[in-house]
Image (tube, rainbow, N blue to C red; front, side):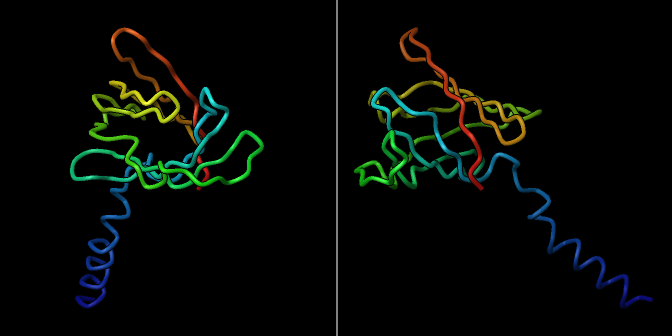
Length: 130
């Protein structure tokens, strides 16, 4: 009996990090930018925040293309605010070369990303790839 209890406790403790994973983590397809290109962004935990890096780039025909932006950080300092909302972070837009004060809202596999810089705001809808 005691061995079963210890084994069960060990299993729960080892599974703890998996239960604590943030639901936003994963790979997302961005909406096409001004140039018609889009990308895949990997969203991950970075210290006490959420970050994202560009993993792949695609042209408007859906063909993977080379890009100097592969591996570049696109999202940083994003803070979970509950109920699928994230805010107080920054997002860099490759098509405009601007960094926006931003927020995100996760709803199922859809991620609404929005931000503003100097009173100019924009938004995109991203979809989960995996």
